[in-house]
Amino acid sequence: MKTTTFDVSEYLDSPEMIAEYLNAALEEGDTEYLMKALGNVAKAKGMANIAEETGLGRESLYKAVSGSVNPKLETVQRIFHAVGVDIKVISRV
Image (cartoon, rainbow, N blue to C red; front, top):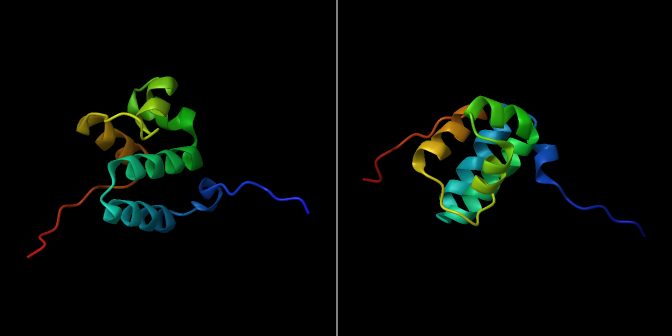
């Protein structure tokens, strides 16, 4: 039996799916997980396109979304914007 590797980026094919996926990642409360999820979205959108739109080099973009570093909030915001989603703050009270 032949198996293939699952690649979530192949299923992130609509703005709604991307938003739900990133919201689920945010709810986990794990920064590494969130950044990897953001990397999957960037891959789905095209890393070269996202790198160009954010002004980051491709290597810097890959590093930022690897989950192994803590990128600046400015970098995270630029990536969110480039993939077409916004971060919204809501009250827990």
